[in-house]
Image (cartoon, rainbow, N blue to C red; front, side):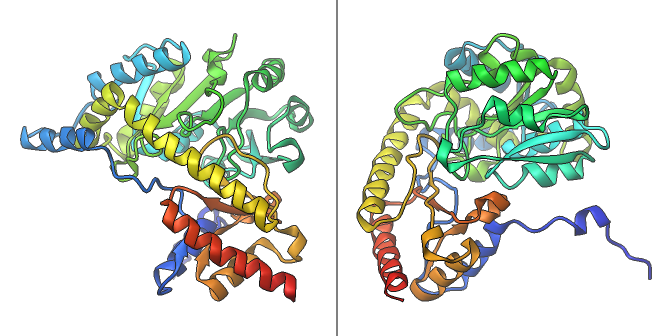
Length: 388
């Protein structure tokens, strides 16, 4: 029998996050700080709207691009939050989570051999989605010494005649790094110089601490060359609803919708009605959850300092990215031994790119009680390592 598998798919490695997630499920008494999922339930008024849509028999397909009312609410949200104006009829598109939007954007824009600049450490999907779309990933290694921010010089250094797309993953998973307006203004000049398109993944835009998120699409000359991706999973605790969206130039949106049309049809109808309610009346819910995350963030940073675990202060998302180099172990070995010895799961930094070596990702999207129990295990483990 001939080989039934596609070489491109076989060459892609499984997610390093899922590896540890699966092991935890089989380890009795384990505590996990490895999953990037809010521990909050979806607020009741949002759930009620989804339930009501089912009770009203709203169980049919929507248009491929999504419910008109939801697209209008997304456009209103972008105007309210970032001062960006998008036409709901052609420049806004509802997807099955933000992850689908990333995949669709890559496939809609990339020709074989087109280069995509991907800052790492970053979310696990960008590189494989580039490969699946026929593009060539070009990795930009972000530096802990610079708080894992992307610089104009780094983009300039990696640009060639084949460079077409820049992935902008901020606020960042796994580091929690953000980009301020001054950072974005500097890289915008290089983007314009090299005529790049930007894929801006802003799924954590509501979760910034100490400052408000700024979208690169809001800078002069950037809106028409930016695909802005966002969703409901992180801000509204709606991971299981699988609802996201993309905003951008009509020309690109039309091609993304075409792929979505054949592969997916439309985002879940029930989720779309819940999404309308989230955008209309969910600001207070977001504020409450954000305050809880911030308290946890400060608790974890304080405890890391006390136990001697180096970690830069992140101002976005709900992750910490401490450095474990002083223990003389690889990230994978550290995470594996921590799980074996203390039944505490974290994610090796290398799950987010080779330059994540020497770091681990810890999510603080867990209750304070869980975090305190996990910190006790982590401290005990570090003491054992230092004792030899």
